[in-house]
Length: 320
Image (cartoon, rainbow, N blue to C red):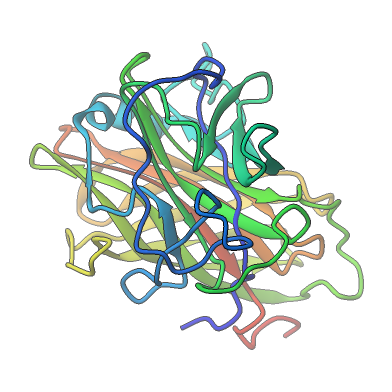
């Protein structure tokens, strides 16, 4: 069990229209476990989920709507853009937009919100306003329940999944607010081989249902050879119920020491299919990373899409 996932939040989402004046049901929040400044409409997050170091601040129920099922296989096989992976792809099968998030103070309500954009448009602000009809979001953070940092400057991650019936699209994201600083593989960086451990969250479609999950991720980076790879396993529902006995391998891929995003292929033991994963260093020194992953069976019996966060600070292997 890792002990030092950076406390925080971060995230990104899809190309919807601008969120001003949007309509639809309000995003469901988990039982209050934290927030900012005691404001009733402030960012809130719930208790830790199913043996993970993640808490939900949107979409805390297990089930995900039918909107996710259609594009899940395509998104699972799409090449990530940075740390975004979705069924909205270009002619080469690459995710069209990189989603990002930042914390803003809403001018009308005077409270904080996570503003999710696709680089050109504001997609939605969480927890307000309400998302567009047919838009679904599940967002997770590593913030410690009950603390109240100044999220406008406090480094944190947000990861999750979204679906939008308007474009029949689905996707996963990882992001960091404030943005990731330039990566410098200097004296403070790991050397030799380093193990990264953390949590994943996303949606798994099988037997006609789409279920949100949390899972465990373990990666190993070889800083001399410039490669990184690993696996996601231990899939379970947000309430802790075990899901399919599935392990998704994040195939070994190369990375450059300038900190650029990296990407590779995925497989799953005993299942004929394919998928993609990608990540990026998230702390400026190569000791933490975040990203997305997907896998889809060739016979369409199973598809999984999610995001992950992991760090090497508790592995005890960095520098060997």
